[in-house]
Image (tube, rainbow, N blue to C red; front, top):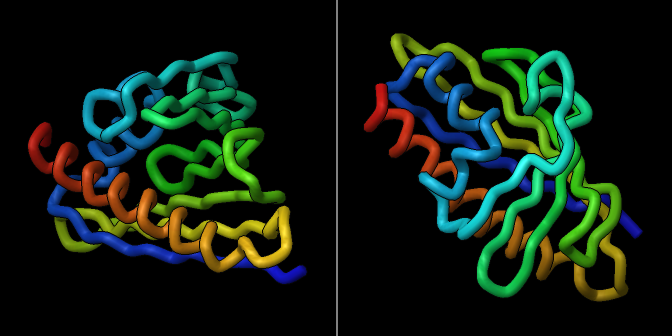
Length: 145
């Protein structure tokens, strides 16, 4: 079957704490992304958006649910897809590393295809979506810093 990988990096002038503020807060995503609705369906620990939280993101054409599996402010945030895309075993790890007075954002995603012949297409879709989200995160973090 094979595992598909998407890696993205962005650098922002915003401090890691500012980037984390927006990245980790599911309810804010509809303010700075193209998502029309973002809901925290289940709270996590130690904070509402922490480990175990289930986040639902809605955009025209559909929605997805993710569960937070790593929450280490302001360095590491990870989630696994629970529903919304025709893929399996999806996990994203987002790492924030200080770079000068700003932050390097490293977004690493892996998944397995669900249906034969769809892996490369889903990788392109995920790369497009994550590229758009990470660019929006940079812009918003810099604007609100």
